[in-house]
Length: 279
Length: 313
Image (tube, rainbow over all chains, first blue to last red; front, side, top):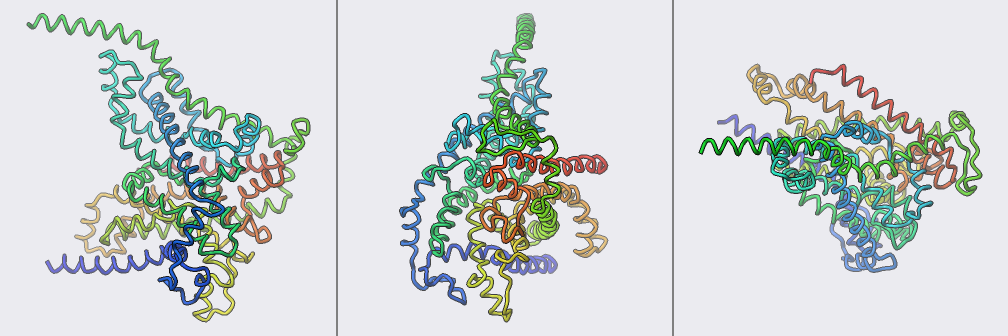
């Protein structure tokens, strides 16, 4: 009895220590949030004011969202690209994953190996030919082009294939005997069984697309097509020394995704642990 | 009754047989149908570019010259790379960057063990340490840039406050810039590594710890003799993933230092980007891409070989 109490005291103490460490770890975020509420003249006062003396939040965020570089536009762009990329990528990957696991066709295994082998190549190693190709076929500086780049995920195919393989082959066979073709089996038998995996992959794909900086940087040129990461960078270079505004932009870029993450926390963390993917 | 049932079964069996034969021919078609969107995308957007990169790495070509400007130089680009001191510096920086990997792996392992076993509010801690990973890297890099500001950034204000008169200029100082970026990278990478370690911890049987408790083992002994060795497959996996990811570092450099000051933070992918999209030297950039790929390939092969020898899991 005494021992359990002793143990839990230790646990409580350690929790307090860990809490302090995690606050330290999160200080950059806290500083960002607090600074985004401040008047510019108060940003670098020392010692740091963790509660703003003059509250400037409304003005700062209004400037970021509806000023010369309206974030609402970049938000719409990011949401559009994120949603469409996720929808296409999930569909294409799920179909391929089903084909590679539940349809017995001769070339299947070889094709899967080829697709998997391309995953080893770093995305940066093929940027140049992709860029040339996009210039030639007119996909450069368009949302469609950007969406297509994120739509054919080998990783997604691999992840979902693992789950489709967990669906018993008997389900497929008995559905076939009942006269269902593969399209029907895919849609009404297999998909419902792997729905949690699909949801996890969809959230991950959305987060990766939302945060992607490299592809928009290279394949977009027009301001009005920019996504959030490019907008933050542009905003930073234009605002120069207006750090309160820059922080308001940073908060705007981070917060919505944080909310998505906290809502889908369980599946995101499980998905990351399962796929072992470092974004 | 029974007779009827048998007849019915027989009929279904025959039906099924017919269908299976038909399906056998159908399977091929269905297979191709399901995988073809993926194949088409991978072929056009990945496989062709891979081949093009290999070909272009042997060309001397500038974007603005048009197709006729291509000069084939064989392995000349690779020759040039070996004497290119910015490239060699970038490779050296990449190798130096590897030092950050064991640092954040160790921190993550300790955090994972403590959070998984020894604290309350597990969910809160998981989310807290995972936040940098899901945060937009551009926004995060911008925040750190201000925190690291040499004259009035909070970090240097603090350092001056505790009596250090000449704190480093961090990202603006050629001696500290790469280390500063590595610090940010450690901060970002902890979340991912910790989550994977936590998943690894779930596979360690509880009774090992109970047995150790009976033998009167201390916490440290249990960590050294049970946790650490049984996490080795996870550590190995993370090591490979993390090492490969350091070869792909780009975003954070593009946002904070752009390879500067004076080339001190140039890394392979940054140099590739700079060569291709700023200086427009397509052939030379493709050659860097091939070298980058070779690095990743070697690490992957080493992983395969090591994994085959490491069969006890």
